[in-house]
Length: 583
Ligand SMILES: NC(=O)C1=CN([C@@H]2O[C@H](COP(=O)(O)OP(=O)(O)OC[C@H]3O[C@@H](n4cnc5c(N)ncnc54)[C@H](OP(=O)(O)O)[C@@H]3O)[C@@H](O)[C@H]2O)[C@@H](O)CC1
Ligand SMILES: [K+]
Image 1 (cartoon, helix red, strand yellow):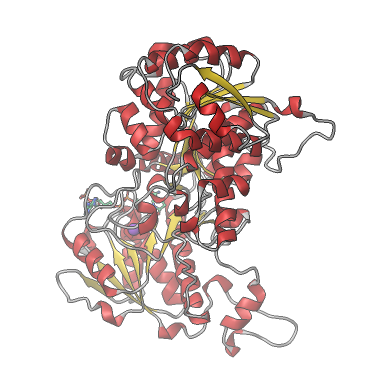
Image 2: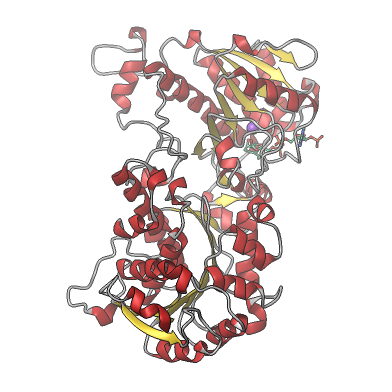
């Protein structure tokens, strides 16, 4: 299971493992360095195999329907990417004739470190003065052992290294691994075939300084593939913010647990392919030492969240079994938003859906979705909502299972009070999106808290701009720490929050959070959010809890968008309606 941690949480788990479990720090560093060396070899082999990387311009990697692809460019245990499932044949292809003994079966020495023509490779290992540098030194030893050429490039004087890292420095020196110190000797990056970035890890603070900054710039400018140890140097491991400069890695070998900065943009782009490698630290310790944040995969949905991702129906089920969604949405200029939401709710599998809308809109939408029931909830000829309509919506909600509101609603006189009445006077699960979120933001900085805790599920689905209005901060500020802001708001306001955007965050009132792995940049299109509102409402109607409906809804939404983009052949031509059709 892929837990996602902050640097402090990682440190606490490290400490526990070393001090309470008694696993020596040296073992962890040995495992870390060895894992980095293996990933370097794997990258070299890929280069030897075909030299052509499969960059199809989808933004985040391959699009396939398997859970492995779900992880996007994140792989666990080093085996998930891109092993191509044929280890034995692969070793055959990669090992030279001298590496195999032909009689009585294959005997292969240390397969993870075997490659053809290792002597053609020469890697520069950029070594910082902390434990990240220690990992790089261990990796250097293993690469030398595998036959590659290696040069250590120290950012600081080697004497600055302490503890375990100093032990590794001395071992490397005794083995005669060539070393230079930045500033003392010139470093010519054109002479290497690849670079290991072991400058800064989770102990990094702020923008890289001095020699660290100079080496990062030189590595990026070299055009050589960079493998980063734990996190790309120059990345904020907690927020995903990239400082100037920041390593642009081809591969990041993330040690033990995923760091938050690697799953949030722009950090996720700087990290390249992320491989999470176990180093002897039990992953399940993570939530005991900080918030529980997980990558949202099919496994997490089926396991921890107990969601039937196969969406099986009871053989004797009827439409009443799958619940009835009431959607209060749409206005004259934005009727399509209501239509998309309502249709998505039906496609998500609810038994029935009623769309409550301004009376003047009714004649224009009758028959557009025949499966949908329509209810005029606001009088007048304007096609807009009004404050008095709250009573009608509440009345309709009495015989429905879920209320969703916001898409295409528009703003109107007294709208914040209109929303407050829905919040306080219906005991149905409530999904709040779009303009309804702006009404909520106008309720004041304490937002929902002053309206009281709802007993039923309450799900808010802001995009970063709406989240900013709720939090009274700018959109870039929200984006700078998406997980942190979403988790805090959900906990403080007692709601389930879906912060939309690349790598959607789902945060619960109890402090759990999930980072979605499905979807693509083609979903940045009008109406995609309205579709999500409908899907989540449709799942709530079928009896899923808030956490399950929000998480599964986001996952399904992205998965359907992937399918739709594959059908069209190009994600950028995706329409929100295509997502509904692919559900
Ligand atoms: N058991 C463990 O702990 C394990 C840890 N592991 C590994 O250790 C890594 C964490 O190691 P770490 O805590 O030593 O910090 P790390 O990131 O190497 O560097 C800190 C040094 O950099 C410096 N520095 C800071 N900011 C800077 C800046 N902006 N620009 C320039 N310099 C800056 C700072 O110096 P200062 O400024 O304080 O003088 C400090 O000396 C982790 O990511 C993983 O790779 C694994 O082996 C598994 C076991
Ligand atoms: K690094």
